[in-house]
Image 1 (cartoon, rainbow, N blue to C red):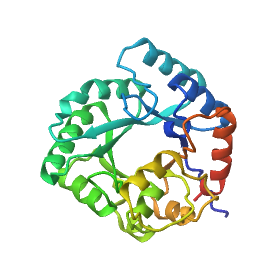
Image 2: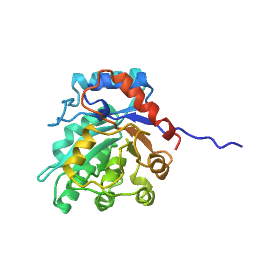
Image 3: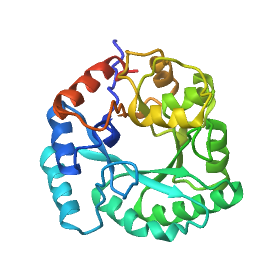
Length: 271
């Protein structure tokens, strides 16, 4: 008997087409053949503002388009835990995420005090739990949680069932991490991962350059040297893939871009 292979679900991360508003992102992802999208719905200082409040007309319209297209929201972003952040500040955001039906929110830590950051993350998890949302901590060399090991330590310290670690192959490489470290990680912490490629696989020498690369200079899968197939194979079998491949902040043909990124990822989808 031939063993069947289940294709991993694939999501179009908002950063890939960050200039496209949420409603149009959903339509574009559906036309390109994705299963889901990621949405950046909090205000940011370094890009287009696609923020949406719970119950707002923009959010209701996004929910309607999701229903019409059959797509779902894999994750929403972003929660930034800074010194003095009260997790309760994000209750409105969590309400909006619940309205979208997204199971995950992306969290970054910008507080250099480990125990204070851990307490804030735990508080966020407590607020997210009744909404059936998992808080996904993303490690980056230009944040205060720089490595996979640091992210796992903080997440496990919360003892929260709805806490996970978001692995991005670029951030893993630039932090000096390895596929073997991902393979050894607790599977329950890894419900999905991001996917992109890069021209080199070494650790970052400069955090500022790593930040600029992450925002604007990633490559589509297969056009770089990151061990993407090995990384996907190290993840749980049901883990979804979020394709986050920004190549600038304006795409004249978003649908063509979305299709190109998805096509490049096809060899990974059964991994």
